Image (cartoon, rainbow, N blue to C red):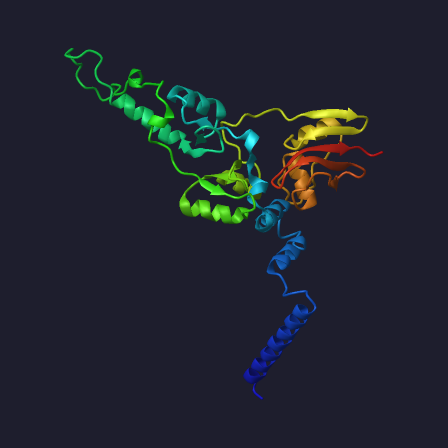
Length: 319
């Protein structure tokens, strides 16, 4: 038998053994080996090749397969929306105070949504009204046109007009809370719609989810220059127990508690206490989970978290 024939024969025998193993696994209810499980096992054993931050991101991508819209949505009580009969002035003030670029629009209640309004479309509409303004005094001599002369007048805008008279509303997606988050992300990309209302079994508005909410389930919090930067709290609950916001600076926490939690030079890129805990756990820990600290005797207890991030935790000193 030639070397080529021998190689083909060996490969054939391997395929036969693989097929037999797969059939045996199916017969006893184990099923076929999961590529997802193989990747997770590979990540666990790739300590030197993959940084903790990369490992967390990759695990979050894999975990997205099991997460639903309900895991990412903003609950109804926290939705910032605008009524259809609100005036342009009220809408402008709401945009300014809410800090959102998109607002759902409803008729009587949130259970009767009409669409959404985007800040860009709203500003474009106001600008078009101002640019169409007539001269203040008919027949008055006009100044020669100037390249830098203003061409709009805010006085021409009727800020008492309601949104019902404005044709700037855009449609939103309506999805159930049980829908896979990954499916919604794909649908949002296909329809170029960044906002969806979550509808309950009775047709009422249950919550709201944006594309950013889903992306944050993978990469963590995404903050821009307009987000309010509140000072993270570090409180002493009792002797040796501290309640700390997960976004607290790791160096500040180490300084306040008198212990160095800074990880050793192992490629980890963490600057917050929450980032350190997620890095140590290898995933986003859930409420009630205990994560040993890198300093012997110290422990982190998660007291507030969701599938995307840790919010607050208790730091226990050695007893």
